[in-house]
Amino acid sequence: MPEESTTVDPAGLPRGSGEATSAPGLTIMRFGLLAAAVLVLASCGAATPKTPVRRAATTSTAEASPGSSTATPPATTGLPVPSFVVPLTLLPRPADLIPFRRPMTPTEGIWHPAGRRVEGTRAVYETSLIPPGGSQPAGIAWMDTSLLRARLYSGSESPGGGPHRYTAPVQPSAARSLVAAFNGGFIMTAANGGYYTEGRIIDPLRAGAASLVIYADGSVDVGAWGRDVRMTPTVVAVRQNLVPLVSGGLPTARAASADWQQWGSTCGASSCAPSVPGIEHQWRSGAGVTANGALVYAQGPALDPLQLASLLARAGVVRGMQLDINPDWPVFATYDPPGAHGLASASNGRKLLAGTVHGPEIFFESWWARDFITMSARHATSGRAPG
Image (tube, rainbow, N blue to C red; front, side, top):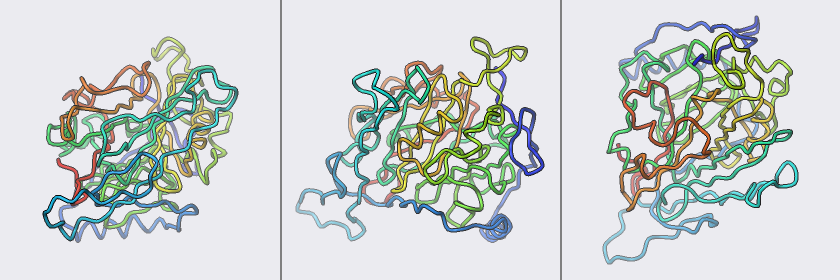
């Protein structure tokens, strides 16, 4: 199946189809060298985000009902409570979404829990919405980043440049805390952006590129590189893909542009042969952050860029980006194994949308060569998830 692709115009923004340039990977062996790289990357400039995003806490100890905002202390066991155990402030459960038109189904826009409980409460909620002007439902997932920590897994094809410590398949040690996982972005020759992970720059980070950034404490942010997000000593992963899709809580002008090809080359209505013209309304996926720090993911089978941006904005996203497109690549799965520390697996996983080509099994396949993001339960006392 052909991959999405873009070219760049003189301003460095994606236009039409073609290939983006990349550079060889750079290995950073010591913190001193990493700090030097930080200074170079930061030279692109950065400004304080216009909409502050709450960073997730790194410790948790308690249970709370889905609608509560603060976890209560654990029940008394007669044993001393370690001093490093602190109450966890949970994000409030998301409010149901208003459909873009009269609901076509009774459950449209209504959140329902998905995946295993974390510290006794739900960390993921899902719903569906018909996008404006559309006829097929798109899936939306909301993730509480105070309960979940993100990790970037890298593939041999995307981004390449391995070997990588974190790559498919997800190992049993990580599966014990895995709650959800979802696809990354374009292959790097088409992403018009960079990739940084495990102390190495696989492809140079580009100023202005839409970036999903993961920090050492597992928190995650999304924004334009050099404006909303930038390199700091606490950044452990950066995944760039094209330009921002949502900014300031609204679809960007580029999202609304009639030149939809700038958002990647698509498959045809029923074929992905290179000779078949692509279509505007195709499988697309995207992610973004809300003002209080929740992470939102959306995917749908017949979306144009503006519809994807509108779905993210309706779910409260203040800064968002497009991820993978075309039938073979978008995938979001949650896992609900028996027991608090049961192993996530294909057998206890569930798709966000039934129509996706791949499902919860794909992240456990050793041949899977694409990057993806996992969301795992934070450890009850240290804020670290096993694995």
